[in-house]
Length: 349
Image (cartoon, rainbow, N blue to C red; front, top):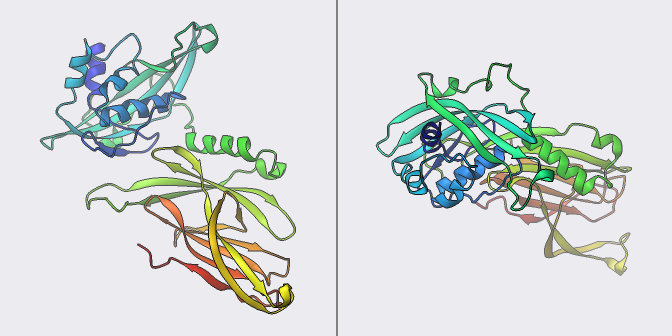
């Protein structure tokens, strides 16, 4: 078992639940991930360490059953590995004797430094010992056992539907659940209760970053749009997105701070000027929406119900994040919609 576990782990790299992820062991930019909050997170952390050549950290994610006879053998096992594509399937769990065991289906396509690719498939078991019965030092979730075997199937078809003889467990949308928990923790007392009960809009965004090579696979992020509260003429929302380094994080929207001047210092008077004097960020998006074709989030904050005074932002997705590209302000209060653009970064790369 130990030899089989070593052979499998020597070929795996950083994995993303339910999706393929491509990583090269020699990539210096590989993100640092050290998270034992779930079985998936431990797998991510293990192969983050391997991709960064932090083999002592990788060795530490295993329990008493180590993947090789000693640490030096473990580290040397990765000498010939170039890159690995990884898929993980639905995770099942069961309790036994004060522990929870998690079974993770896995398929990989491993490419060595000679360019030869091979497919392997199987299951890994991770164990979480009840924290209430542990004595110091505390041991979080760890890899208990597992093995991957050569597969003749294509990589796309090689992932086992489940571990063991039972039916596959229902697929858990881990990122969505994390976003929901973050919303409740941060805005649970500010959102309308009926809106908290609603499911968010979910979008998948595939892209290539600025450093991608022509043959590199697309990256993917997911966007979650939660409607939080509504007043007379403005609806406030909160957005979360997946990030390959930080997991799920809330979007922050840049907004310009302005100095608005009116004749006689009266907003009912003639508008003289609107000047940008700085920038700030906010987690709120007012009267917002995501355009899947343009890859933009737009906001429109009405200053009064007739909509003749407002501010509006456009945020473009590029290089894995949203950034402000245009901001308009209508400060005239003249009964007409006539905004002026005060920030324009549409030509930025």
